[in-house]
Amino acid sequence: MPELPEAEVVAQQLRTHLLGAQLHECRVGRADIVREGLSTLSWYHGAVLEGVERYGKSVALGFKKEDELRYVVAELGMTGLLLFRTTQTKYPQHVHVRMSFTGGHESELRYWNPRRFGRLSLLDRAGLDRYRARRFGVDPLTVPRDEFVRLMQAKRGRVKPLLMHQQVIAGIGNIYANEILFRARLHPNREVSRLRGTTIITLYDIIQTVLREAISCGGSSVKDFFAPDGTEGQFKQHHLVYGKEGQPCPNRCGRIIRRLQSERSSFFCPACQSNRASR
Image (cartoon, rainbow, N blue to C red; front, top):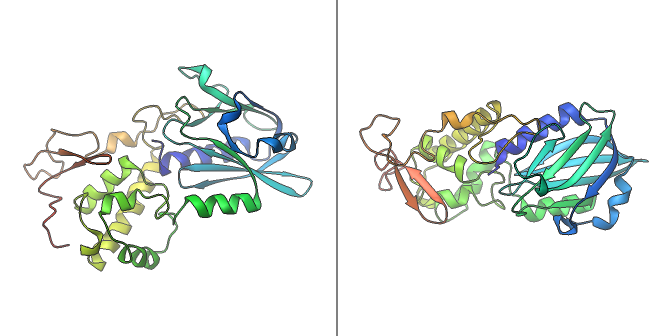
């Protein structure tokens, strides 16, 4: 947390409020919050924010100055947030980077990250290309259906860890993997090699539906996620199984949602998501 929908909500708000603004100053509170490129920090002063893109769970801010493009890539990680100045935070000491702007709808963007699992990277275009190739697989919102089917058919292992493998499919984390698999009626431990082509197509369509629904709801504010303007994501109101251990299955099959503890907690219905079904 945050995952792809939350990162997309962040990117959308930054485009709305800061595109075309000039970066006046960037203050870094602790050097270890910048993974690479700290020596280039002074270049960004006076640059104009020309674009904002999302890659997996990361958000890339593209700056232009004197016909040169450079990027600030923010990993949201487990607890990282990009917040406008007016958004209050519980622990302001964990604001590690402050970027002040002129000419935008907001005057400041802050990088808040108490556990520091995420970092910022300051990159040129070649560096961004290497960063993307190293970290991200296909984007589940833009990958063509036939390419997704071929990708899944070439893989082995259990379906849930594969959905969450960022170098294979970028952006899906534990929350959305649980919700996707429940709607697809797939057990989290189902072997990918046992999935029929029609089942993979159904899975693809459900991934698209769940992620787009979540984005339209502003994401899921399960723990500490807030959009840059401080709003909470409301898709948590539409979660069917995540965090629902002990509650009746929403499909009204008569069974109770169970929790499977493996790498990450999996919530599933033992009837609707049987691991013995031939799918």
